[in-house]
Image 1 (tube, rainbow, N blue to C red):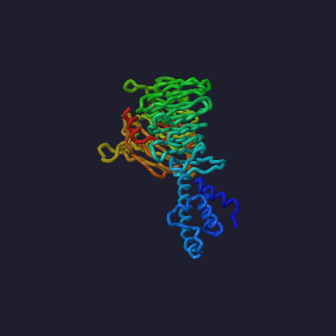
Image 2 (cartoon, rainbow, N blue to C red):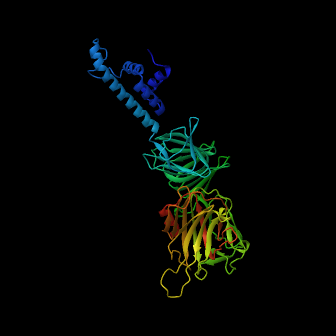
Length: 492
């Protein structure tokens, strides 16, 4: 008796090493429960020349007693063979070359017409298409080398080839940040968009595929950017940016020095205009912000924006000085940095002052805000804290979370570098002053709004809690800066 056609196909796939984990599970089930299938499989393996090569093993003995003794050995060997084939198949199916890490929010993998939810540790294969939703991000990481591609929100990447010496990818839309280990000579990693191709030997860079152009920022090393249909490309080196549009012409610009950490920079408002009501964005993303009631000043020859001096407590928002950003697509994990000067005489008492807040906070019930808690009022000479602290507040409905830094964290009458890291997907936040972490909390909530615009110097509701002080050099990053990057910015 001969088993069905499906079982025969499974035997062939196992022999060729192309069996999938699902097929192997079905083959294993049949061998465990179907005696006819087991006999067929033994004969199949014997015909393939895999059993009769074993020394001392004879399956064609004329004596039935000897045959009955040999059969258990044959089945055991067949089971071992199936296990080895299945293990090899499972190993290659797992594909230890690369996989997903640090998945935040809804991310999907399109594989052979099926949509799979991406999870940490899932293996990736050539042909996979990875899509991050507008409020999500994920990392494609190689397991045997220090190479990774961080996919930002609303990004689609197709893996054309993942083999060593033949890494090829197509960025359909969105932005990725790459850290690429040195590749073998003559075998660069290739990243393509519809506007051109990027050749990478080993570097750190950010690549964007936009509706009208392809853009790359290089932080270290160098890449070769070639426009579509062009015979030769241009080298984009350390701290340079390259752009190519429909014409295929490559434009190269110089970026700020490495210590300004350009990778993942969403917006940068230096506030060095000294006049006017526009804060110009120097990140290259065209996100100019507006300034309400601008009051400019200088400090050590550098311009800065002066916030709400000598205004009554209950003045309307319209009379305050504040910065309003354009609409921003904040990812679930981001960093905001700025330089802040708080006046000592305006920081007394228990009044709250707003450093930044988002439009989701307009109702006071949904969003995030960073507040300065005034220094306690007490008689002179009384021991204890005598400087303001910082409070990060997240709200959603009737639930709110507060993270308060230690007292005396924010010294007054001097410039302080402030960095706030917010990771909504993990419910974590961290506040740093002058490059040192002063407060961290593992539970700030995961459901508050990230809606924009952002407001600096005021909260967009009736109480507005205005800031009284000075501010300059505001930056927003689409990722969590590491401690070294924060220290570099603080020393800048």
